[in-house]
Length: 98
Image (cartoon, rainbow, N blue to C red; front, side):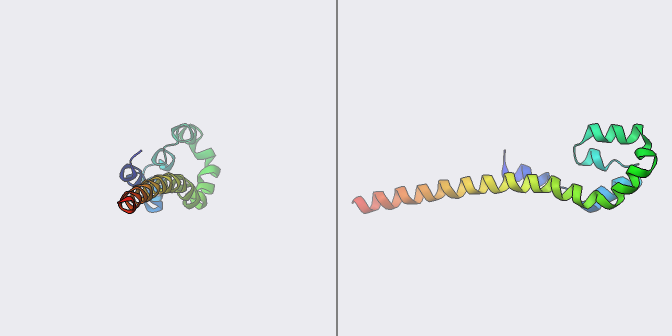
């Protein structure tokens, strides 16, 4: 995947809260968890209990979602650094051989 594409997928806790309050708990859809989103709607937010719990756990849900993206970005950056280092070593060895 492209690093810039992944960076565009990073989510905001503020947007998640806005969706929670303004659009009847669409914070799960925002995080790409459509199964949970539909279950949340069908149960009316667990008759309010699930909705109340989510009020306090949204930051953690967003942080876990973003942590996965950050790991992928870090892996891409490591691969780019390794590739650049190998290129520089090849240039050094080529210059050294002359």
